[in-house]
Amino acid sequence: MRKFLFTVWEIAEVFLIALIAVGAIKYFLIQPFIVNGASMEPSFYDGDYLLIDEISYRINPPARGDVVVFKSPYNPSTYYIKRVIGLPGERVEVENSKIKIYNQENPNGFYVEESYLSDFRNDWSGETSFSLKDNQYFVMGDNRANSLDSRYWGPLEKDSIVGLVRLRLWPIPDMKVFEKTMYSQ
Image (cartoon, rainbow, N blue to C red; front, side, top):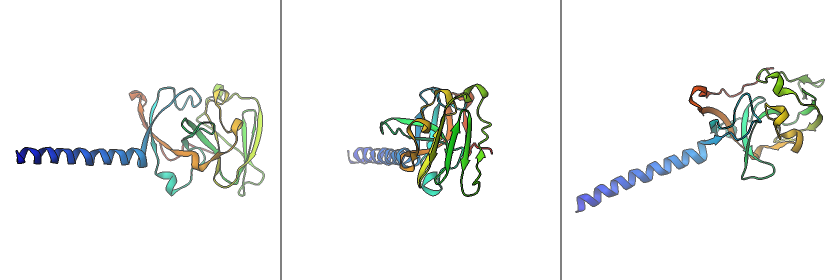
């Protein structure tokens, strides 16, 4: 009987350690995320299953072009996925489909080149301008005509960012590992 109880205890210990390890990984290292909606097409589609890196931004700040998951500015229990366009200390001007960034290195500004956008997704008419403070980012969906983003609710606070998109697991034919940034200027 003692041997049986000892065996049960060993199995329970292994199960408990595995449960703690999985919990620690899920809550501190990576987190799953399912894309809901069309705001990031053609980069990510409704139903894509992603893994989010929660560690990188504890070491380095988000970079222009990073695709991030963050808590909605309207409801912290809802999560959004968008691309980082503007960085802390920059001024971002969006006019129709053109984005111009002003910063210390480019006081006259530069236009953001976004090779990841398809032409029909980039069609948005409107204009807005924001000056970003420390720990603020300007984020936009790749499907500009169908994205609720910083153009509407303003800068995103760094504290709201959950993590960086690192891996698409589903659908299997589209499985992909993403580099730190998908930006090209």
